[in-house]
Image (cartoon, rainbow, N blue to C red; front, side, top):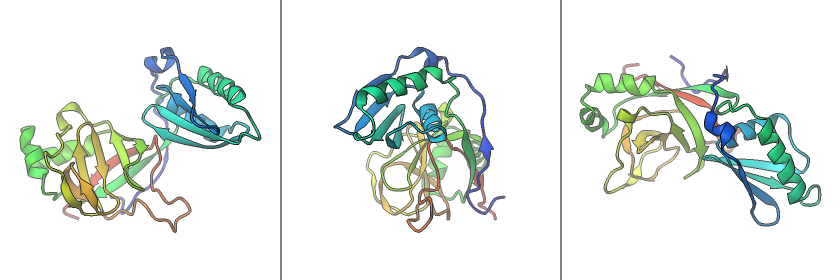
Length: 227
């Protein structure tokens, strides 16, 4: 089993009918940014990273949203809007574009693990096996540095949030909340169901790339409870 996050090229080639048929919405944000709302937002991000547009300084992904920051001395919002629309029109609808596969070692011993397993009528062993088999994907980053909202949980593994959030969730806690899975990079308050923990360092300002994962990365939890 991998001792830490490990990356490799990945492309599943899936097509998104919704991405091809839903018209994008591109609106200004202040005087140096545009907001693109489209099911193809993540694929557009990958395209911009591979083929940067003139004047674009940074592109920040969220769920079906991409905020494009630009230099107003190099381009105009009209020109950039036209260029972004043209790029979107040329995308194929491959969900997420090219990303990496990341294996995250997890010790499954969280305080909510037995409750989650019982809720869906599985033994703890069966529940852990199901969570590790889920095809997770980084939808977007947020909440706190290094935190990734992981989508892809099967319906039966989607857990309700706690009625009363914990004031302190330990760093490295692996949790389920609503349609999401996630890992708390540092101690924070939190209302998700904690099922395990990991020693992986998800945020380190001393690394060339401080955040361990990017939107579009595919993630697998690897059970190292007995390791």
